[in-house]
Length: 170
Image (tube, rainbow, N blue to C red):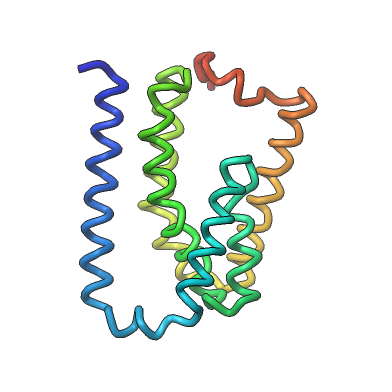
């Protein structure tokens, strides 16, 4: 089994475990889930367009961060949690779709995976304890940095996606 197949299997296993955990949690907390504000049909249509725009490079995280609080679908305290849960399955499908097609150096890929996993396990323990305004500032700062890196890549000041097949260097 080559490394790409191994990574695909690991991605499928981890996301399968997450899906099972999510379904169990939803079943256990069915009453509170049904009390969530928002029309499910309107939310589904909105999220369809959010993820459609994300295929063109427009951040669904940024769109969700703007839409959800304004529409009162989620409180500020639960915004980050909702956004993360929204993108998990999308990332799973994209990873399975693109990993065998996109050429990325193994070291670069492993560093990105490690950073993502580490952040997913460590940050929730701290983020839930932060005040809402601090969380908003972190999200805004992250989106501004991401936007800056995208613009820098487009104007040639920073390596764009087409250069990701070179080894990652510390």
